Each structure stands twice: as C-alpha cells, then as structure tokens.
Image (tube, rainbow over all chains, first blue to last red; front, side, top):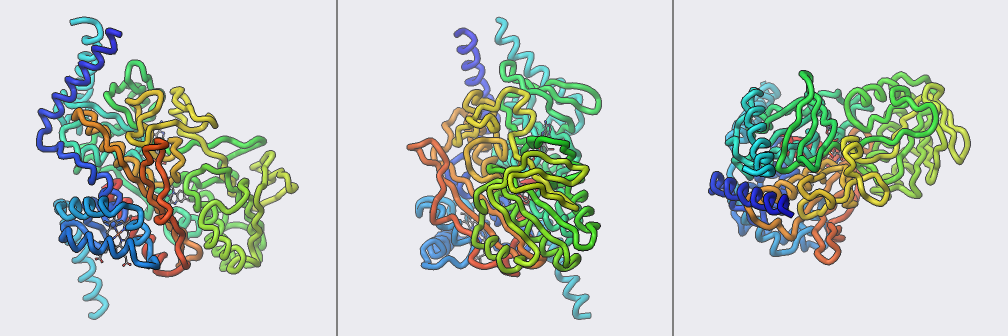
Length: 128
Length: 421
Ligand SMILES: Cc1cc2nc3c(=O)[nH]c(=O)nc-3n(C[C@H](O)[C@H](O)[C@H](O)COP(=O)(O)OP(=O)(O)OC[C@H]3O[C@@H](n4cnc5c(N)ncnc54)[C@H](O)[C@@H]3O)c2cc1C
C-alpha cells in the first residue's frame, strides 16, 4: 500500500517536471493521432519524399473539401478514397486543420531541393 | 529518505551516470522521463521518432541488436533479383542525429517488470537500463516445426537480410525443371498477403527463367487469407500452368537437408523449399513472462495506449501484440503513433485519446512490373474496447496494374522515411 502511494507521488512528480520543462510542447489534441495516419504515405507532417502528393500546409478548407469528395464519390478511384472513408466528417475536418498547420522541417526541405536538382540534371542529360 | 524513494532516486541517478558515459547521450535533461524502446524495426523506429518529435524533453533510448534494419517490405523483389538488399537497408542515423534518440546496440535479454529495468547484452558487457515506460516492438519469433528443421537449408526469408539472399540464390540456381515448394503458416502471421505475393512473383520469375519448373504452394489455412480476388485470379490465369495451390495442408514434419515435407496430402519433395514457420511474439516477451493471450503466443494490450494488460507501464506494439489488427509495417507505424501520444500524455498528466485510429496498407507485386494492394482503417470501439475495422475503408485493388507497382515504391519510401527519417 505504502509502496503504491509513493509510486503515485513519484509519477505526479514526473508529470510536474515534464509539464514544467516542456511547457510549449504539450499541445496534444486528438487530431494528431488521426492526422499522423496520413503520414505513412504523404510523409511526416504531410511533406513526402518522391512521387506522392504534398498535403502539409495546404488550405484547410480545400483539404477538407477534397477529403469529403474522395469519401463520398460513388465508386472508389484508388487507395486514397478508402482512407477518406475510414474517418467521420468531424475527424476529417480536424485532420485537415492539423495538417494545414504543419510546416516543412529543414531536413525535408533540403532533401526536396536535392531531389529537384537530381531531376533537373536527369532532364538536362536526356535532352543534351 | 525512505527506502522506496531512495530506490527511485538511485534509478534516476543511474540513468544520468549512464547517460554521461555513452557518447551521443544526454539530449534531454537528466531529470526528464526515461523511455526505453526494445527493437528498431517499423514499430520501434516510429515510436522513438514521434516521442521526440511530439515530446521534446524526454529521454528515449532504443536498444537494437543489429547495426541497421533490413525492411521486409519490398523484400520479395530481392528474392526474384529485381533489386538488391540495399533497396531495403534502413539506417538509424536520422533517429540519432535529427531526433536525439539515444541508440544502444545490444540484445535485450530480459525485462524485469517489478524493478522496471531491462537487462541488455552489449559488445562491452551487460547493462541494466531503468525505465519509466518501456516499449517493446521485437517483431516475431518462429515456432520450429517437427523433424530435422534447418532454416539455412529451407529458408523462410520472413525476416529480411541473410535469409532473403539465401532464398534468392536457391531459386536462381534451382535445376532446370525443378520444384519450388512454399509453406504458408497458419494465421496470424506477419503481412497477410505476403506469402501469396511471394508465390506469384516466384512463379513469374521461374516462368521466365526456368519455364519447366513447378511451384507447389501448401497453405495451412482453409483459403487465401488476403486479396482473394487478386491472388485467386493470378493463380488461375497467369500461373495456372506452373503453380499448384493446396489449402488446409498440415505439415507433420520436415527434413530440411533432404528437402522433404511429410504432409496430410502425402510426401512432398522440393528442390527448393521456402518453409515459413508459424509465428509467435518476439523471444524477449516469452522470456520475460509477458505473453498472456489465449493461444500463448501474443501479448494482450489496451489499444488506447498499447500498454500490456498485466503491466500497463510496458507497451507492446507491432507484430507481437494481440489486438488482432493486421501484422504489417504500416500498422506497426500506426500503433507507434497511438502509443507515443498516450505516453506523452501520461507524462503530462493527461488522459489518452479515447478515439484512436490506425491504418494498414500492403502493396502486393503480382509480376515483375504489376501490383495490387490491400488497405484498411481501424477505429476504437468503446463498447468492446477493441479496434474495429471500418468496413467502407477495407478493400483490395480493383485491378492489378503497372501504376500500382509504381505507387508501391512511392508508398514504401514514404513509410520508410516516416518511420526512420
Ligand atoms: C515478405 C514480406 C512482405 C511484407 N510486406 C509488407 C507490406 O507490403 N506492408 C506492410 O505494412 N508490411 C509488410 N510486411 C510486414 C512487416 O515487415 C512487419 O509487420 C513489420 O516489420 C513489423 O514491425 P515490428 O516493429 O513489429 O517488427 P520488425 O520490423 O521486425 O522489427 C523488430 C526489430 O527488433 C529487433 N529485436 C528483436 N528482438 C530484440 C531484442 N531482444 N533486443 C534488441 N533488438 C531486438 C530486431 O532486430 C528488429 O530490428 C512484410 C513482411 C514480409 C516478411
């Protein structure tokens, strides 16, 4: 019993230390789990590598509208439509807001620039 | 200071001492919560990354026995020689350098739930790592079949690396007109469409390079376990001349060096045998007494946190847990995010998200340049306390196409980057 109480006190202590030292980091809202289920395909925070649509930072209303269109069109047109069908409209709204607020990390930007340079070089070689 | 408090204090002091002794450590304050992650595959890599990305000041130490990870995803293309092992080689540099994950090469030998420590064997000896939260994502372990079973002689290639190359060489060097035998394990196993996909691409390879060869597929299950339309069509049309598919086959025993399987449909002799054994949770979970489901193979968890039912401070994600969601890399990544979110909220004194969702996707090559896919989204069902498939989100591709084959690489590279990058 006593052990349990100390364990609890210890955990509260940890929680305090954590919240204190990490004040700006704890803006956890429910949408981050849902939105992060899009990142396996569209890249972390919506910034992909290679040939996949970038969705990070897009306007939340147009993201939401696209998702609703993909969810409700009669016949699915690809794997994306099935993912849109996995969520409630409210979840899709929250996902659109979350993804829209994300910016590209430095590394992602560097990698994208390198990729674009490579593509340009390849194109020059093909034409040259 | 009483005894319990001192133990807790010493635990933290121990972490700080260890942290300063190992280069690359100490990215978070020594007093920050300490999370240890066992296994650096899809689940372990993703949870380490997202704990740091979303959490900031938190100590995350990954314990991984290998210097790098070879992804099983895309590995059937290595078996058929379409590309090499380097296509699926994933490094831990980004986790260490970008995300400040402390990385320790070593094998976790035992978890001690009472003292909240893990014993790890490293190149320089054994260490005990204390944790506030432990995450275990060790993938799967195999149940050896009866008989003279030697994985080197009858490779499963169901963990990527040496085994994949072994099977590649055996198929490539198989005698003209030889017989390739595949054994599909009883579900649940990792990647439900994976064995059928392998049967297809191997049949495709042999049709092109060894046209008199034969493929015999022995399935322990009563039917094709995933993408039945896609694989059923491929078996009946593309590969009807070369491939025989048998359901409900029990293998009584195997003689790997002789290449013989004794089954309930008779003795089967193969020039090359790809025997994929039945699966169970990673060895560390069995050794630590954490396996507790009805089949005595997997670990029961609460899908809101992935905390084990018996020890909520120990979280199990990926292939080893018992929620019944598909065992896939995409899914391991999905569960890792739910788990990371729950752990960060726990340290912040908040409740976990009561409506977590997860997703899975598997792309399945059918020939050397076409593929199908299978995908699904799962939502938490408060009534049953289980993750529930959203029926409208679950489907296999309507057609096998070259576009899908291209999309497979785009998906895989993003999954690799989201997990390891
Ligand atoms: C042929 C094939 C095709 C597949 N295709 C797909 C696909 O298309 N899509 C998909 O989503 N999934 C696919 N999968 C499934 C996918 O590979 C697994 O589901 C996924 O890897 C599971 O992730 P995990 O984290 O549970 O385990 P793993 O990724 O296997 O990682 C486990 C890690 O833990 C380490 N480890 C284990 N025990 C210890 C220990 N005691 N100490 C230290 N380290 C330890 C291992 O070295 C390993 O690095 C495929 C699998 C196969 C075999």
